[in-house]
Image 1: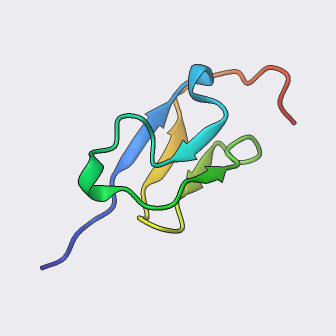
Image 2: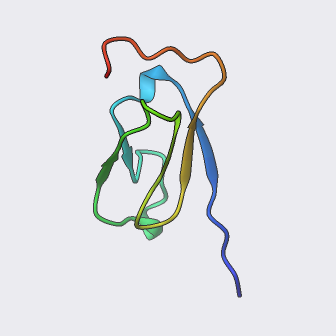
Image 3: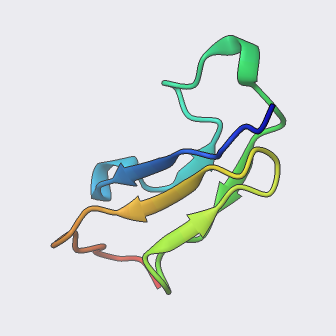
Length: 64
């Protein structure tokens, strides 16, 4: 059985971004890791492979 990672779109309200998020089911928890999405608009969790992408038009204010 092959399991594919999901892609989740996030907005500025989800920053700072970490995985797992509050919406992650308890059965799929792993250690929390903070992900930098500011440079490329995309980040991949090293534990579960979930890809997070900024929603089109999202502006990050006060982040470098």
